[in-house]
Length: 100
Image 1 (tube, one colour):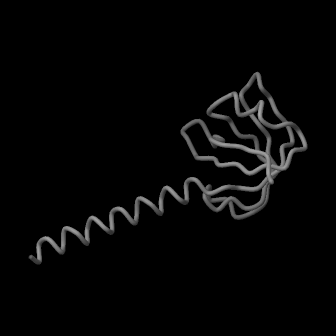
Image 2: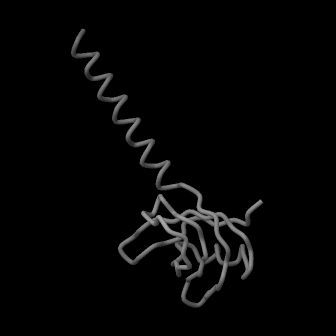
Image 3: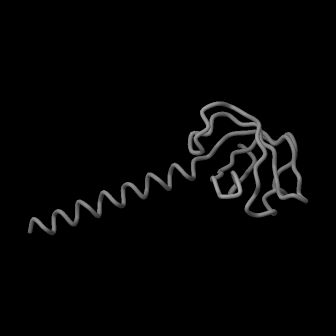
């Protein structure tokens, strides 16, 4: 009986940690589109702190996009929310949409 309880507790802890990691990775960041370079597959965003990326200060930064179609959803000057992750090639936007 104790073994079953220990296994259940370990499983609950594993699920909790995995859920927390996914939530941090997918945290939406508010920003503004400053430049779009469709040819290079990059977007320049001015944004506030991005805790999910380890950025504590507001900044303007160039990001790669994982899908070039994302660049067609926005234009320079748009207020947006986006999600990004750190990859071997640098920070990459995985999702972007106009802010409501």
